[in-house]
Image 1 (spheres, one colour):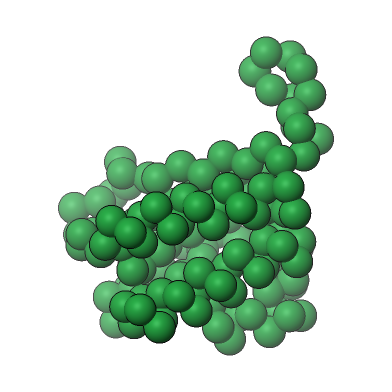
Image 2 (cartoon, rainbow, N blue to C red; image 1 turned 90 degrees about the vertical axis):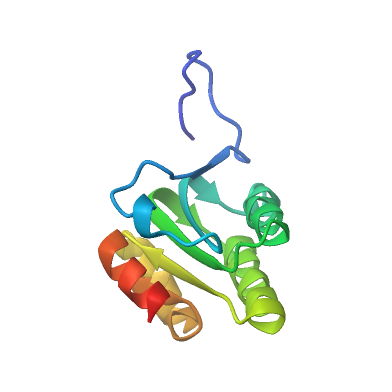
Length: 135
């Protein structure tokens, strides 16, 4: 578990999902795109929070997500299900997509073993994710 700023122990459902707006690519982002960064675990306890963060943005017109997993420590089947259901909704409703980048090796292996790397785009960094998003 993670320590919080107050010195206590973070609960298992602690996940921070932040929209990145100060990136060097912010000037090229279209209105239908969002860059999200997750910190912590996307698990049974936090997958709902992750999915809601994406759903809120979908309802505001976003259909392309670039998701930075560099500070994500763990993902379980509930987290994977959140990615799958959101990707399915994006594709069905708006021909949208999710592209993840800065994926730690232990998480990349999970995406490969579950073959989700075939459904969700995986790139090395934000620049490559942007290239994939606009292609």
